[in-house]
Structures are given as structure tokens and as C-alpha cells.
Image 1 (tube, rainbow over the protein chains, first blue to last red):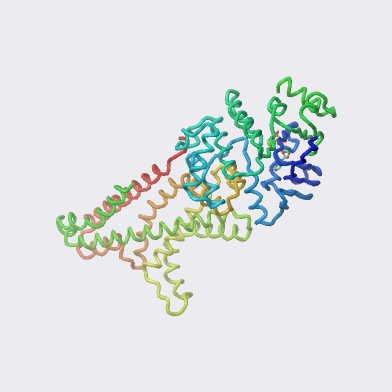
Image 2: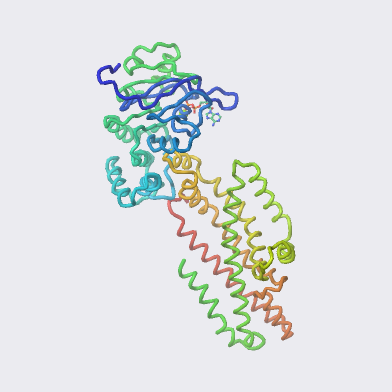
Length: 252
Length: 241
Ligand SMILES: Nc1ncnc2c1ncn2[C@@H]1O[C@H](COP(=O)(O)OP(=O)(O)OP(=O)(O)O)[C@@H](O)[C@H]1O
Ligand SMILES: [Mg+2]
């Protein structure tokens, strides 16, 4: 697609397979992601989207194949893993904020512990990030005191506090009440234009179509389509993708 | 929290004054009662703290991926919970000195403290394990994804939250420990019950003596319960009720 100033590849996935017992969750998945690219990952439930995302920061270990992130191979080497987790942030469907810490401490914990930032520097940065997601006034509260949409925006700020090169989103709006979906999508849209590399598993087809540079369609543990949003939505190549799209369009 | 702690200290160190005003056989033995209460509280605090540490370590051990460690912790809890405390105290007192290296002397108090720590530690293990399991797995994943090491994840995310869950049960065990420490009298530690036994043996008046002992125990257990309740309230942040 983009041929002029070819952006640097930041994630390289080669023939990655993953089993859960006898179940084949990923079947020789290969893909390269470039710096600044926003990729939407879609597909039916159980097709391996979450598993794929989770192998990229080793919340799941892959069985075979190779994953290289920013030049570092993801394997059992703890030093590589630590370095990779500093570069790759993740936002979960269920927010997973630390419920015993204030919003501010949620955001500063990792920079202080992992990046060895001073508390003052970490807090200053956290406040700036909370302002960016529109939650500066909530810094002293605890997660339970916030709405789902606010919690997810905090989770995004928490991931950004580590200054990652890549952000992984696993259905960031699926657990939200409909009226809160947009406030989170707005933050993600702003991020997408900031140049950070994003991989977003989502059921929000509108968001995928409008914001993503690229669509991956997963089916039964494999990437069935890897194309542009325009192409995918107007002219899907596979019957499975057509069936998926019509199902999504007509509600669940 | 501080009020409860200071209250406990005042009770312990000021106790002899009102007691000495009570008629015989209590008044003349006021200092003995106060000393006995201090020994009881020291035993409780020392064994209670060591017991929490043991409970955390063994609770973690029970959840470890290492099968041998899991078996060891299971065996420890099974052994302690399946045998009488008195037997454990006697065992430590009689058997430990024979396996100690030359020159190391264990006082009776130390033997009692070791036995009580091991005992309450086993009961704490189950509470801590339940507390750890109650921490949402998603938060552990979030910590790992942020790059925290397993130790940092445990100390910063899992431990504080599991303690919040485990605290009522741990407090319960601590209150029991105040009473269980009375069994140390069997190996001649001069704690509160032993004092009562001696004073009534000298005065031939068991009823007022044991009523006094009972009241002191009640004051101590109440103080410990208040203390842990205050601690609970302090940790009770960010929790859905
Ligand atoms: N830890 C696990 N143990 C066993 N099976 C698992 C595990 N995690 C995922 N699976 C299975 O792997 C398959 C792929 O799961 P995955 O969560 O990646 O799907 P998904 O595409 O994210 O689906 P959804 O849209 O429902 O989130 C599913 O059939 C799931 O049951
Ligand atoms: Mg999923």
C-alpha cells in the first residue's frame, strides 16, 4: 500500500501457532505491522483474536513460530520480555484497573517501578495524560467511583504512561454501556492520529472503517483477509467474511 | 487505630494500679497479674506477626507451580491442623533443643513463641490463600502487561488486596491466639494463666483469681479486636461494599 517512505516494521509475526490442549487456537499466523499503523482485528467469536493479541506481549506463550518486536525476539529470555513489555502496552476489555489504588497511583505505578521514574516526574506525567483523556479532576478517586467509560480512559492513560511504541486493545468498548462507547472511541481516535502503532480487536465496525489503516479478518485461528478497510467492507474476498459482515450489520 | 493501640499499652502498663486497690487475694498480686498480661501480649504479638509472615509464605507456596513446594505447604497445614496445640508446644519444647546446634539455648518463652507461630501460621495459610485467589486475575495480567516483575506484581497488586480480603479471618486467628497462648503455661512460661494458677494456689481462693484472669483476657481480646477492626477500616478503600 504505502510505498513512498516505507515505514519501519515494528512487529514481525512469522508462522505463529498456539494450542490450548488439543484445541488449535492459532494456525501458522504471519503478519508484519509497521510503525504508526492502526490495524483493526475483526472476526467471529472464538476465532483467536484475543489469543493473537496476547501472544504479542506473552500473556500467552506461542508454541511455534517467531515473534520479533522492535528487533527483539519474544521468547523465554526474561530480559527481552521485560524490554518488550516496556514497548508494548495493553488495554483490556474489563479495564483491569488496580482497585486498591487511586487513579493517579494506577497511572504512576509502572513508570515508578519499571522505568524507575521519580514520583514527582511520574505524577506530573500522569496528570498530563489524565488531562489528555479528560479525567484530570478524577485523579484522587478510586476506580469503583468512576463509570466504565472513565475507567477505560484511565486504563488507556495507564498504558500510555509507559510511553509504549505499540498499544494493543482487546475489545476496549465491549464491556461498556452504549452511551459510554463514544468517549473511549474519541480518545482512541485521537491516539491513532498521534503516530503510535495500534492493534485493535473490535466489534465496532464504524470505528474500524473510519480509523484503521488496515483490517485483519480472523477465522478459526488464521488470518483469512488482510486488506484495507475500504476493500474489506465493500468487497470482502471470502464467503466467511461476507457472512460475518452481514451478521454484524444486522445486529447480534 | 492509634487510639486502640495506645489503649492497649495503657491497659498493660497501668493495669497494676487499679488492681492493687482490689482486696486480697488480687491486690497483693497486682504486679504479678500485670507481668503475666505483658507476657501474654508479647507472646501474642510475636507469634501473631511471625504467623502472618508464615501464612503469607505458605499461602503463596500452596499456589506455587512447583509441586514439591505445594506438597510441603499442604503437609505443614495438614500436620498442624490435625494435631493438638498442646502437643505441638510440648514437642517444640522437648524435641527442638535436642536438634539445636551446640551452644544455642532456647528459652521456654522462645519455644512457646515458635510453637504458637507455627500453629497460627497454618491457620493463616488458608486465609491468605483465599485472599490471593480473590484478587481478580485481570489485574495481575494488567500488571504483567505493564512490565512489573512477578515480585513487584505480588507486592504492589496482589498482597495489599489479598490482605484486605484475608484480614477479618486473620484478626479472628489473632484473637484466638491471645487465648491459645495460655497453653504455654504447660512448659512453665509465666503468662497470665500461669500467674492465676500460682496466685490461687497460694491464696486458696480460685474464684476471684480466675474471674480476674478472665476479665483481663476479655480486655485483651477486645483490644486486639478493636485494633484489627481499625486496621480493616483503614484498608477499606476502593472496595465495593
Ligand atoms: N486459556 C485458555 N484455555 C483454553 N482455551 C482457550 C483459552 N483461551 C482461549 N481459549 C480458546 O481459544 C479459542 C480462541 O479464543 P480467543 O479468546 O482468542 O477468541 P476471540 O477471537 O478473542 O473471541 P471473542 O470475540 O469471543 O473474544 C476459543 O475457542 C477459546 O475457547
Ligand atoms: Mg476475545
